[in-house]
Structure formats: C-alpha cells, structure tokens
Image (cartoon, rainbow, N blue to C red; front, side, top):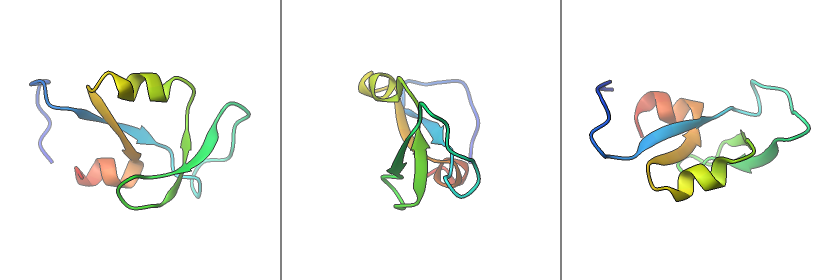
Length: 66
C-alpha cells in the first residue's frame, strides 16, 4: 500500500467489520462490495460515495489496498 497526498483517484472509506464492532442504532448491516464480508454502513456514507472521491470497502479490503 502506498500512502501519498490525494491525486484525484478515489480513496477508501472503511466500513467497520460486523464481527469486530458491535451494532449501533444508526448503523445498517451491509456487505463489502469487494469481498462480501458483513460490515456496518454509517449515516451519510451513500452521499459521500456519490461524490466519486471515495469507495466504501470493509476495513480489511481498505488495508489491503483493494
């Protein structure tokens, strides 16, 4: 993984893994679009992803740079 200043390419938003983080009232259970692991979607995420500047993936996929 390379960490560098943003160059216009989409970054990643980490979706907390359901197996690691307990549920919160305002979170929705979903699956990672890359690996299918159950994770939590936070309020406002869809609007952020709609900007095209980030992609939402589970924590493990984000760490792997998928």
